Length: 512
Image (tube, rainbow, N blue to C red; front, side, top):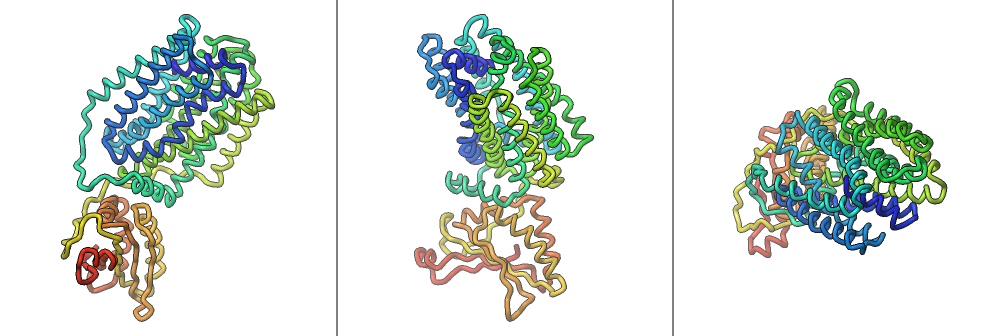
């Protein structure tokens, strides 16, 4: 935050363009949109502590370069944007691994409080950092703000080196980047609540970032002030976020998730309008303080909603998708409101942003966010791979899976309803070309069919099943009326069998 104050104020010195000033904030948020999905794959596929260490060391190097160039007087506007972009790239690499580590640090019931505490810690720095940054820039110059930022990474790296997380045993090889990325996207596409949370985050990020992106212009043009007042305004925003975080638990105990979201949208829209017209520094600080409280409540709430709704195997990727939406909205909003301010004026830009926030409020009435699911998302860990009766490697495939069900005619409606929930689980966990077949000669016999790429992907697919998912399977088992348990046939396509010089396709029936 000290660095951000220095970068934003330096840009007002290097360039008179309002668009360039707003692009400083865009250069901070854009990498969080562009690289978050890559970082999410790394968070789910590699040791998260190692990923975070690499990110922090990269940021240390770039921040040191930034401080050196400013001290030598070699900085240009586009070079400032490029280096700020690079630092934020390290943040994008760090963030999914850090957020996904919460489930390794605290039990599920403490996740909302843990996420709020983390957000409060970040916003304490958001409160103190800008104020310190304003004093540093006004007293020593911009280069000192960048030097402080570079030094701060040493403490973070030391903390990560001291942390010894419990490492889980890896029984399967790591997924390739392409496979892991595709699995994450498939999970997202069939998860309507995660999609809704992400869209809501995009709308809020796009509109609400106007306050931070245009705040240097508010300080300079509306309040006729200097860098110290700009730091004070950012400090007021951070202080509001801290107070909002402290009140979050009490608010959650009285209001539902969707009610808090709507209230936050409405309050921030009002604060956005007020900040455009108030010319008194202390009233502006009060308005921005209220905006900060709304900011932290909705951001922590949406973040926790994602963490509480997905299992651990895909948590890093879903956090990354959410980050892509919310920070993508911020990056696009930073550029949009900077351009709008340059063309139409600062007040009109703020009014337009408030209008978008009202649209986000209306969206919640049509597509409300669901409450936290009261389900166990830990792995079920009940599956034992069947004995293979011919030479079959982990990469052999494609594998076709068929499961037989015997369903009484009176239970068909209930079976189809249960199967719809089960289909979604199958697709989320990596199944492809899923279909449900009914025997025309024996109508009581139903066959569920799907494919996976190879044998390893099949073991990984079944291993992703959670305790909550098993309830859907139990519904199907209760509807099965056969004399024997449901039967599953795991078969490999004929071309692969010929390649392995086997004599026939493998069909290995045994209970699910």
